[in-house]
Amino acid sequence: MLLSLVLHMYSMRCVLPAAVLLGTAPTYVLVWGAWRLLSAFLPARFYQAVDDRLYCIYQNMVLFFFENYTGVQVLLYGDLPKNKENIIYLANHQSTVDWIIADMLAVRQNALGHVRYVLKDGLKWLPLYGCYFSQHGGIYVKRSARFNEKGMRRKLQSYVRAGTPMYLVIFPEGTRYNPELTKVLSASQAFAAQEGLAVLKHVLTPRVKATHVAFDSMKHYLDAIYDVTVAFEGTVDDKGQRREAPSMVEFLCKECPKIHIHIDRIDKKDVPEERVCLRRWLHERFEIKDKLLIEFYDSLDPERRNRFPGKSVNSKLSLKKTLPSLLLLGGLTAGMLMTEVGRRLYVKTWVCGTLVGCLWVGIKA
Image (cartoon, rainbow, N blue to C red; front, side, top):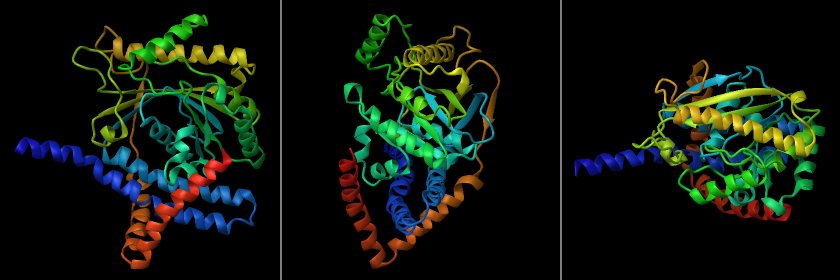
């Protein structure tokens, strides 16, 4: 019985973060919606500046749980600039936590409000969040032949014309790497071999479409590309084989003691513009990622395993950055739920906001 109680308490560690993150969503959407209406007759840059600030507040609350609450150790390797830039962020994709990793780096550059994602199309139906991510600058894309290149290019060019700060996150693999899904890995490796490309072990063969459209649309606006490689410590089984990376729930249950993040800043002048050349360049970047991950997971030298080559910096995120956002959004939500009118508004926001949001993204699709 005692063991069952301990296991139950262990599994409950993600309940508080999930309740707060989801519970404050209607409050956040109400505040954002009010500003959207108030700013309708103002220049777009005023709306964007406040929207970025609101997004920063919410994501700081997210980081409170994913960094301060979990106590995860964030180890940085390479060259993360201290100042914010207009960039494309290219990373390996293995977990739902990967979206939060981008926030972890952006907050350390004071660029958290500028993070915008290229997302798979199905996520646009998420209640409240799906519509808002699009409004904040996210771009939903479909795979393969259904990829809407013109739509993505049009949206990015509108951001460039408006001078929108850009921290555009792309996962070129298109889906998460999972060593247990052997059919997916085999298909990815077979495709690489067929195309005369190097076969990769710890990452999937990258797809170039979204990266090419993004770079081609913003090449005169960008400062650099960040090539980011992420490894979660504790994802090796007893036999030394890599296993699936932690999900958001597992991460919030404190199942990941350390995150290793390698950053390589690449100046835009060193990135080829032609699509064929960019495809080769992108695959070469993923070859570098693969070598880093082979060293991390498979090195025969125990001293070189569970780390990337080079010097690492243990980067801690101060509570001063995250706790005020938690108190603000948590306080506003609690205040709303204490009154009958507030509770009705809260429920209506969840229901009507979801329906209107889905209708909006459906029309825009």
